Image (cartoon, rainbow, N blue to C red; front, side, top):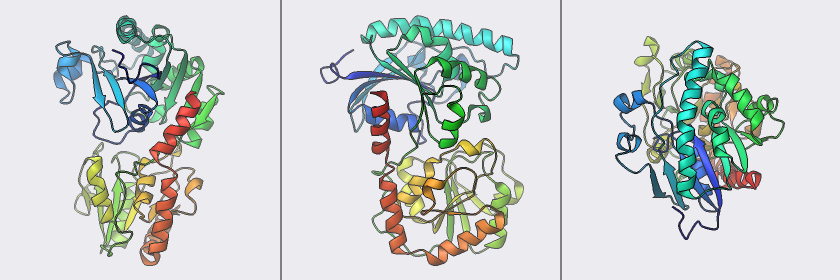
Length: 384
């Protein structure tokens, strides 16, 4: 499977939790795509289950069942990437009992190890860096089969707060993080926590795709529109949104992102929830916003978040108002923070009134230093 273009490149195998064809912006995809410019990258796709084969609308069923090649090459704007779909595994997230979960995880791990050994021979990879992207359960149970020259755990979220692995994940993460050579996190809070599992722990914050999030004209006419881009889930402070609609009835709130919770009845008629839209469509929506919001609740889980959206907002020169959900000191001079509902609303009014072309340009210049290209360069230096 080697090509002339990548025969002399160092090899990175990404054992990913995010799916390659996800319609949402994912840091794993952004980084691995850009690493193809300097490395041969093999991307192990999301582990679909047998349940997904029959019920998941986006599951690559023919590849999973062996009716199509499990390895394919795709050309990215930066270089060629090899994408691998391993056979489906048994579903196990429904299991509550730790012993039964462990047994199922080990069974799935045994199943995958058989194919990993064959895959390595097929691809001709012996010396490589393994990057496990937020997939510690499978990482722990396939670690010996990979036999990587260097292994890295890429942690971009607090696993105890995830719906799919909040119950069992932390235990497996702790064991896996202790086995790898390095841990890379996306926020200072995550780095603080995960360095207790592995002292060789580094920070590579999320970035922004400057080729997508750019604005021809820095400032537009005021539209009395407030906006949010990202998942609509239990991180959102819905009470805050309601207070905003009551205090600023002349403004509309536009929300763009996948819906993952039931919405409070009072918000259905007051806030416009559009669902997920492609990344390429977001700039035109953001350009219509007077203020971009990050209305997160403040708790132990959100404290670990470095929001992707913050640099996307700033790259388009938009004023940003956020709650104090996490350490946002890197953005002190670029965004406004309201640590109470009242102060959040006051900041919205203030930012609408005092926004300017100069401030917009400063935000854009700041965001340029946080591009995915810059983040990939940092990751590449850590891998090397």
